[in-house]
Structures are given as structure tokens and as C-alpha cells.
Length: 479
Image 1: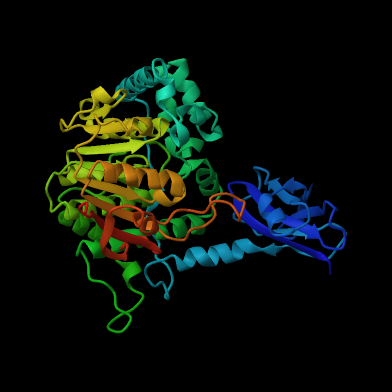
Image 2: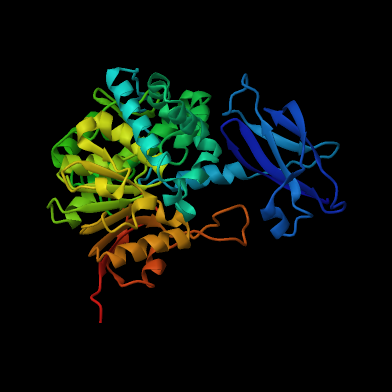
């Protein structure tokens, strides 16, 4: 048999993969798409993929994408077969599902519990429109006078061209506060939050998932929440050598949350800022998996700061979750450095959570203050000496994806400013950054630190995220 091919993923409503005929390398293989053994369409494997070419698979033009029609469930069993042959493409999604199962922190040898889950509910209010007006003003203050200030990988004009962010940038430029507020209230379902929150692809997948599939997703979040409770000492850690095993996942949802709240001194469930965010359902609102990770990161940061309110700078702040929990824990001198567009997403969340007067968007270096407000600094301004005075730096789950050049430049800038302590929560897989398997790979923080004066003094597995590492670095004195 001369055919070879794989279904690589089924994300959102798109089946992706590749197929190749070794006996006829130039052939573009015709494929039949089946749902539960019934043919629903056809396609041709002709999309160029550099990873295929680098692997010696013909000229690389053997990829395919097939969009599942809206009437069909994404949770059904899909197959791809070579037209006119008996060859089925290997379904790599089965391996992916097993891999996701192995990411669980707790044993579920006796199965998974039935949990309360659902979506956040919110609608546009006056505060949303007021925040949207402030976002538009901040954007204009950046664009009008100083476009050339943002250079290299932080060039805000590059962000204009990014497809996932184009709709958001267009609304900022139009200046319609009501339309921008309506867009932002639904951020969990927008393309711009892919990789930051829920994103459009996961929202689509959730919308077509079965109740069992939704419960399974909720169980992933529950697994993280159990680990957070164990880290905080709100519950004992299950031991495979002693006592009951595989029962932790059947803990009571409300009892665990109440214990975590007591350990934190406040409710772990954040305010319901968005509409349509999936997560664990509590009377207080929805708890998303990224909330749990952010809470853990902020708590570790607070402990490293010896529970003092030292000046903290976070590089790459996601949607602002760690900043939210850090402030609740008492770290009030907090700055986030990020791409300008992402800084505005953080502004939206944090201004709604704490009030417009508690968040400052720094449009010019001279606007920066250590005044008790959360400071949001576009990355292109970070090189200015007016923005400084930090004692502790923090990065969670973004240095590797930035690549060695950008992440390394941040470390060197922190070193130049004599920021004494760096806390990292990151994975070390060094996976390819693009589809080109021979191209640049993800950065490893530990390896980047070796080129600076930062020295590791504490390193251990992250409590709430399997495969991630907590590492504390301190700055060595100059010789």
C-alpha cells in the first residue's frame, strides 16, 4: 500500500490532516470525509505545509482542511478515507485525547464525577461603555503621536495585520464605545482571546459538545481546583501508597470552594465580567481554568514577596487574571508589560473588576507611577528608564512561546534594571514555534537565564499544571 496520511486535529469545526501517495509523489490525493460511517463530503489534500516538506513528504503540498457543516455534531466519530481505495487515514486525535487524559493531576480510576458547569452571563451596562470610551482614548493616545516608538517584535502595526485582532482594532479605530462594549462583553467567544482565555475555536467546540463532553471539560477545571486546594492546605493530598485512592475527584464542590476561600481570605470566583465563559458553576459565578492558574501564580508571587507589597512587574499578563488575584492578596504595586492590544484587554477586565480609577494605561513613559493603581505598559515603552523601580519580576506561561530572542531581551532588560528576583511558571518542552519543524523552537527560561546574572535558587513542579515548572531566580552581584 503506497498511501500514508493522518487526521492531525479536529478543532472548532475543522478537520485538519494530510495524505500522500508514495507511488505518485506529485498526486494530490482525493479524500472522502465520513461521519459515523456515512459520507458527508470530499476534499483534496493539496495545501502546502512546510513541516511535510521538511519531513520529505513530497513537495509539502499534501495537507487538507475540511469544515464540518453546522448541522453535524463535532463530538461525532469522523473518518477520512482515500477515494477509490480502502485506506483510512490514521486518527491522531485518539492519541491527543489520551494525552489530554494523562494531563490530569488526580487519579480517576473510578471514573469522573458529575459536576455543575455552565456559562457566565453578563450584559452591557454603563460601566462597560465607560470602560470602552477609556480604551478608545488610550488607543488614540498611542496611535496618533508615536507609532514609531513600537519597534521589533513589539511593533503595534504588526498587530493591526494579525487576523485574530483585526476586528478589535477596527472597533477601536471607529470610536463607537457602545459597539466596542458589546464586543468586549463577549470576549470569551472572540478570536482575539484564543490562547488568552476561551477563544472562538473552543467556544465553537463547546457549543456542539455532548453533555458528557461538557462534563469532561469541567472535570479538567475541577482537577486544577483540587490541586489549588491541596497547594493551599485546604485539603490533604491523596497518596497512592496509603489510604483511599482515586477518590479525590469526588470531593464536594461547594465544600472545597469554601475551604479555598477561607485559605485565601476572599472568594476564589472572580466577578462575572464576561458573557459566555464556560467553567465550574457556583452561586458566585463561573470559575474558568485560567482563573485557577492565575490564582495559584499570584499566591506563589505573594509568598515569594514574603507577603509584602513590593513593586512587581509581570511580563505578559494574559487577560489580567494574575494581577486581579495579586491585588486581592495585597500586592498593590503591580505593573503588566504586554503588547498594546493585549494591554487594552487587560484594561477592560481589571477596570470592570476594580473600577476605572484603579487601573492606569500608560501611553507615555512619563505617565508611569507607583501610585497604587495597576499599571498597564505597552511593551515598546518598557525600555524607557522612566518605567522601573521593580523588586520582583513574574512570567507565567508565555516566555517559551515568545521565542528565545524576545524572551531573552526581557531577561536582559530586567537584569539591566537590577530587578532582584524573577519568578517563572513555564513549560520546558521546546516545541517548534511554527509548522516548520526545523525552524525556531520555544524558549526554555532556565537556559535563557544562563546568559544573564540570574541564578536559580528554587525549582519544583507546578502544583496546578502538569508538566510546568516553578522556578525562582535571584540576580547575582556584579563581579
